[in-house]
Amino acid sequence: MEFDPMQLGRMPPYGTEHVAMLVVLVAAAAAAVIWARRSGLTPRTERILSVAGWAYLVLSLAWSTWDLLPQNFTVEQSIPMHLSDVLRIITAIALITRAPLAIAISFYWGLTLNLQSIVTPDLNYITHPSIDFASYWIFHGLALIVPLVMVFGLGYRVTWRAYAWAFGSLLVWAGVAALVNTATGSNYGYLSHAPAGPSILDIMGGWPTYLLVEAVAILAVWALMTLPWAILQRRSPAPAVGRMRVMRLADSRRPEVVLRRADTNTGVPDRTARRLRGRHQRCDSRLHP
Image 1 (cartoon, rainbow, N blue to C red):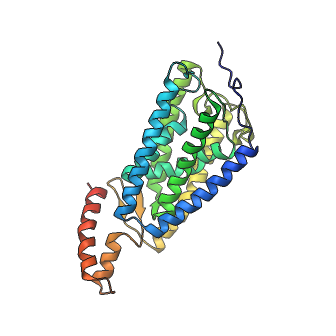
Image 2: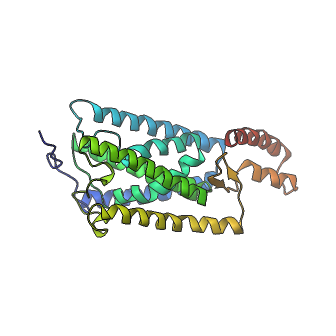
């Protein structure tokens, strides 16, 4: 039987459900960033992020398993090769470990390619409409909110090295997805043809022209996303984190910042400084293994 993406219907772009979810996502993102800015990157915040990351990872793996069940499987949709499938795992790793490369990829992919799926969704109901709807918005929504929290809430800064690694990682994913598409006749990543519904690809020309145009547009947009942080780094330097040095971290609540204040006699109690020195040593061992 030929796959029919309309067999259970689809969510119409800019309908009531779509607009309602956009409002929910904006409110949730704002609340999460405000919470992160107020909390700072403290051990308590790290525990909350880790728990959220594990929950996100379990949900992602459960959804992929659900898709692979015989009664739900379609070769066009169920193989975990959508960019969102890969991004879910990377975003979960960013939450659990605060790994700089995972944060960098989630920032670039999540705020552009993933955002395209939010602004111009291509949501076909394949198994159960309510489950398909909930999973689509939970996974795409979290992939948008997490990098906003990491960068605008907790003080992580992208670098030109992060820019290069994120684009290189995108090319690797695209190469693997293209091989899967060739072998199965599917269209993961819309690398074989544009989606059925309206999307930004419609203004980029037909296939394969839009692939080249999209690559150039991604490079340009990601450069514009990186430039403000490069300028900020010159004016207000922040230390690099991790061995790959793809991200920098500037947060007034980080233990080492408080320690500098204590060491310069700015009123931080001695007992607080002693406690934070021990905490900073543990944090530093994780950031620089």
